[in-house]
Amino acid sequence: CQKLAEFVSLRNRMPQQDDADPEAKRLSHWFKNVGSRWKGMPSHRLKLLQQAHPIISRRLLSWMDQPAEWTDNCESLSVFVKQNRRLPANKKSANLQEQRLGAWLHTQRQSIN
Image (cartoon, rainbow, N blue to C red; front, side, top):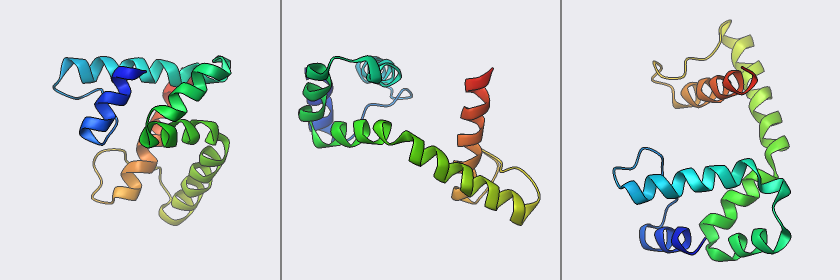
């Protein structure tokens, strides 16, 4: 938690899995694992993460509000399909909204396989 807070404070962003820095990759992987288990996390650990840095706190809040985000994405996907009569592409589109929807749909498909 402390190393993540130091990283975020220094770089003003969350670590990414595609970072060139091995420590950033490790922190990203660690935080991703935290995200998959946050519901079972003891409240004192969750509180430590929330207090570590505002950027970390915002990410935690986005996890806690996932049902609303999922519903919003599902509605956006429905509108896209009705307007375009196809599923969104996740990489080969110049439209960033289409790429985002396509990436979200890809993630949903991966999670059920």
